[in-house]
Image 1 (cartoon, rainbow, N blue to C red):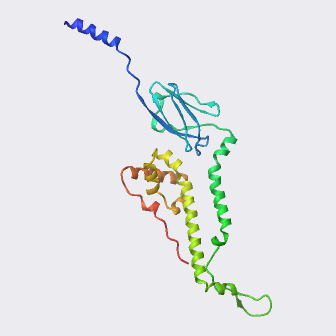
Image 2: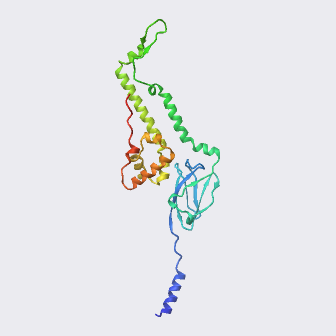
Image 3: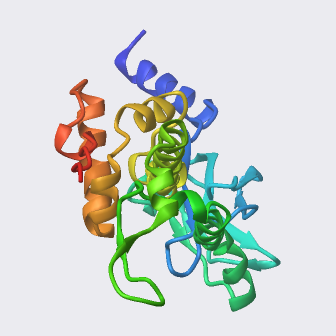
Length: 255
């Protein structure tokens, strides 16, 4: 077979061969409201190839696409522009912010308002426990007459040892529960998932091992707190232990 014949046969084979399939991969990310602070649930995610999905309660989505696809988002009948897949810089973190009207935004903000309301209500329900202090001998001035006396009820309470221990233990337990709820509020799964792209069970392990202390959580602003999550994720990826500066609980000073 001459070179001329082989060349023409190869050209004919190429012309008759089926076209190569477009490469497929996954695009995923989070859909947020216009402030980029709150996740949007039940947003429709569609592609030009006919595939689609919806966001979960954390605003997370993932959809299989081909390189010839475009992707767009739809919420309550309103759609975004179409984004060509080849122009998406990072398909593994393609976050989108939707413009929503005020009534929808108020519904999305329910969760943080509930935390504060629950905290206030808890303080009201257990006001007697939260306000409890150790009994002390306190001098009092009688309403009538001269001299100085002592609060009889406080004097009696000083010798109610079992009651005092129970009240202090209950108070400490309530304070610890309040601190834990505040950490859960800021170190929440939706935020950590959005910043780290971790998925269960790795996400659950990260939340457990790198849970910050109450002292750091209370004093850190949003930038410092998110920076901590990203730095902790780096340590998590490379098998490094948590930095004790951010995870060690400071012991309260005794009176």
